[in-house]
Image (cartoon, rainbow, N blue to C red; front, side, top):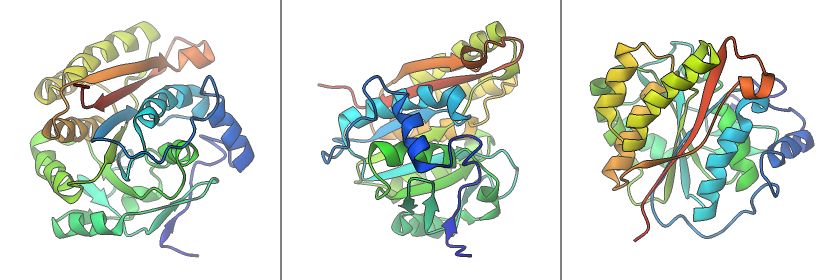
Length: 280
């Protein structure tokens, strides 16, 4: 087995394993089908919070964010800040993989950026990615909207205190300087609360996120013991976007699993938030 390629682990569970069915599933999330790929590069940095649940539950929410980015152009590189559900690896981990595979194709890992991050002290921990789905679930959308040729930078992030993540966030900034980069924080929001409770908690959490107030978001996350699985990734994303001159986020779509299942007793919340430079 080629261990340099990270094989899919949730194909056939979170999304279809058959390429044609996967394309059809993704196309169903858009009013007019998958947005056409553009060769026009992004005219500046962009950020996105996107969910990573099974596509029947959160695919349409994630697609709303990627469609909005696609309208602005094609990223040169996509940095994928995944949640860490397994507890393996360090607070912030990179891997030795050279490519990530989905049923659509293989996305190459930017070895240049990964090399810079390793030089900056990032831990290389393949085990952090072996059973982690949060990054993988983003890839078919990226590959279908653009193509599998866009280099990716997979980074697994624990929800540790912000002061422990800040230096690594700034290392990512340095490693991707000058690139038209899309930075994705892969995160679901409230887990396994009644629907009304989840919507209230998520609305409270989204308020500082949209204002890009990292300290306020972290305080709320810690004090209320929120179950946002990618909180660390979100904090890193907010810092990177602020450092690149983005002033606020835009909530594009929100839903809970109840919108798909009808069961409002214990839901998971999903949000798609875009961060881009304001037009002048």
